[in-house]
Image (cartoon, rainbow, N blue to C red):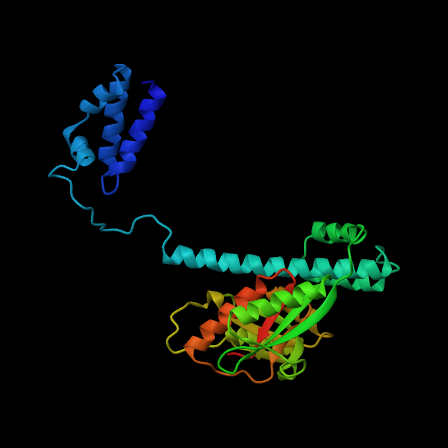
Length: 322
């Protein structure tokens, strides 16, 4: 057997019983193996020449014992899973934002051409894209996409949904195929056991506003209130806190509510104070009166919202659930 095959055999052996074996012992094994290789022994001869403690681990002799960890092994545990989940949520949120801006660019170009000088609708979208830090290449790609044969303009649609526990939802869609979008939304709502609502039966429970989201872990409450007051914001909504909630502040957000006219002033003030923030995608729907639901309904509503947001045509889902 060649030396490369023999080295792979060593790797398999090390992997087989390295769980709980000290690094000193493993280093000793590696040195011992290299000596055997230098003698050009066959695989079987090399194996038989290994130290007794190695053979014991390999063959499950009397000395072999189940390992009990005194320190946590290096693994993808609960904390790292949370971090991965948060990153995934942030990436998904950013992807939705980029998708919406791209669709708005296409629609603006289809209506008035690719020049922002003569096309005020496109100029407005480009200004919003800059405000929201949308990469330039995404904007340029969608300007080019708008001129492709067969590309239709995107149309805004709003679907209203009755969730669980008395909660309601508003689903915002920007689509070039209305029949496709409504069919997809209805299918998700039906599969989750919720119900589509008639137009206007839910929307009146929300108001539209410009919103800046700030992680609770990134700012002091009193500092944020002072900044919002100086910038002329309408309101600061604090993140909800539950008695049995053991999570840290990394996924809780303050919301600064502002008028469209004053939004840029709020962003500038936050930048001056060095406070990190996340902008909205142009505006958000805020519940006029949030309602409390039980734990079961809360989880069902979260699952429904999650599945709706996975649809390509859906840009945002809002709920009046606390």
